[in-house]
Amino acid sequence: MKTTLFALIFFIGIFFTEAYSQSQKVSFRVSISDGSSKSVFDQNPDIEHIYIRYKNGEPAIISFYERSEKPESKLIEKYYTRFEGDCYELSKKYPGLQLPQMPKLDVWHFAGVQSLKDSSIHVEVTTNLKRDTLVHNFTYTILGNTYVYDFMEMNERPKLKGSISDFQKKLRLAYQQWKPIAVTDSALLITGIVEKDGSFGNVQLLMGKPSPFSDKVLNFISREARSWWPGKALRTKIIREYAKIFVRLNKDDSITFSTL
Image (cartoon, rainbow, N blue to C red; front, side):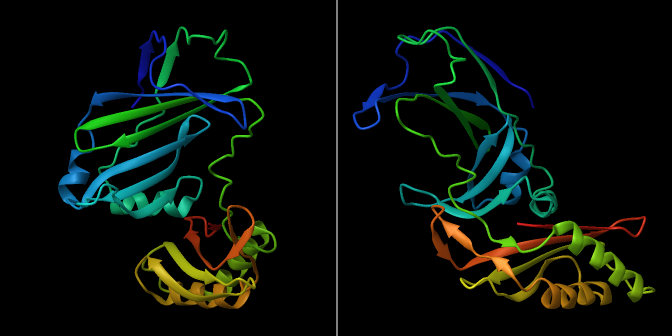
């Protein structure tokens, strides 16, 4: 779904100045009627809206929020499109979901701003996907001495120590030793807990039907993927955090292995 919006804007939204940073910000929203994902809301009536953040012009984080009587909806689950396992889970759980591409906005003029292509202007676009509406939120920040943190970098996910490609090769060699073996699901999504000391445990099959193949993979991961860099909150505080591993057996007997 590609959307181009055109706007002539003079003091639209709310301008404000942060004294400590000498930055200015303008925010506004555009609502569009859209029912392309009605089936998702019909099949999941507890979902109030789906919040989408973009990176490099593509959906990057998809957050599902639950209906609530409180002013703020409760976050149900979050998916990262850079992780193949989340994309797989998203497609399986919400087959009718159509993620909107980041809308293109042609802005002709902001009062006091000569060029919106200036490197000192930070642009963020988010979308609220509702049952029959798309609400695009645009925020333009004119930077002073402030650094705008990348929302993808604010919290650091746990990272497996060692080379992912080495684990992938090692798992493929192990699979060659297991053959012939029954495979019910060739794609497996696995979860575990990375402790503050970097140890990895509580390994479980999150998605994929149990089979001798999945049992072997779980045993391999429990044995081989034991050492991680722990997660961090706000890039500094070490935290106990879950991690996901996606394993797919391809038709040529190669193995896809990735982590989040």
